[in-house]
Image (cartoon, rainbow, N blue to C red; front, side, top):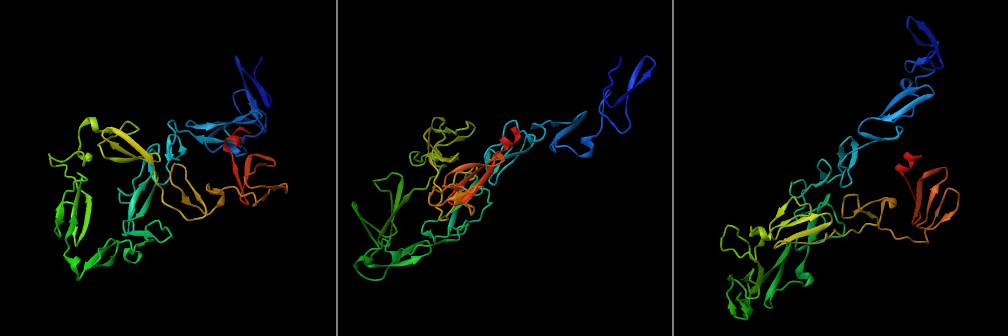
Length: 369
């Protein structure tokens, strides 16, 4: 009339009993004992984030609170998930990839605005989702090496390329990022600028009739027109030309998250698109990525623009060339683009990418097997 299990000895007590372990056995609970304590000895297959419970015939693995899995494999669980390619490393804690921050990696770091990036003086910093780009300034172009800091931007010689607009009697002089027209002699050296409405004097500024938002200047016989700068402090400012000065609620825009309000004319990045507020309407277009000349490129998770990579297995710009083949473990020839499972490893998938064997392991498959 007792509940003592195997490997125990029932000891009668006044009004009750107890179960003592036989010599050489270790207690599991009040009624049972086992030969080995696999949890204490380290002879178990529990994950480091699991709780090991000794049993009569072995041990039991249970994931700790904040982790999910079968006990042999336990992964941290973040209730709201990690965005932008972030990794859940401990309960409700995300490690963000480079270029993102926030509790869920939901915020793009503007490396340009925060002064984290110092581009070469021939280039300017352009923020991208999760990244940045040093873009050559006007009057400069890249020499083909596409250095990340913009140091590969070199001056465009408009004079030798004949892309200048110097008039007949002037001489083109190349300058860093531009050029100048020097007039020494001749009837065209007055510096005045002929216009449809008459002659504009050298150094004169005026508002052209063809564009209400522009201002034109005459400089050494050449007409230069540019967009007129905005002065939001001027109550008479033309809001058609300066929408950024328009504070009327009807012309403002909410971004796609519904949390940020933008003035008309403002721009922002959303996902992989450039967006602009146009008098209450949001207009978006695809983000323009910098040109790359490297052989292999890949788009990292959470980013929009490709980067150069050296490993062809990581590249996503390769088109399958059936002339480049691979050998699988059985010795069979595989065409580029073919996939197969590794023998005795059903969770490992391999693919032939232009003569390179590229393999990956499915973690979910491992957990279920």
